[in-house]
Length: 67
Image 1 (cartoon, rainbow, N blue to C red):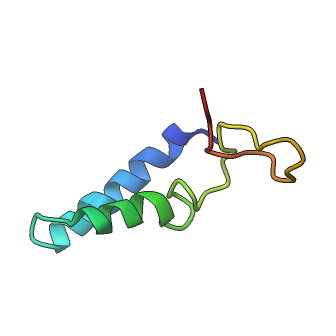
Image 2: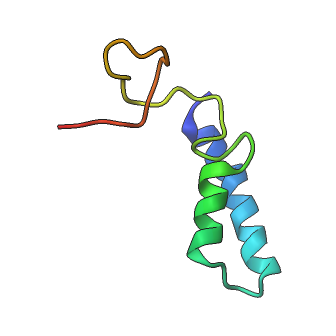
């Protein structure tokens, strides 16, 4: 599964939320949906994160990256 597969369903949910809210969605609500929508949000899906955990850590992926 790639992030592209999740994009359209998440976009649809966000679009529907904007319509239900009368055409305006606060940034906080948008970010909550983008990050935590079950199965679709960045932190709420099964995709591996792109970074590597620091040495000794047990998780396989992370979104923490340094230059």
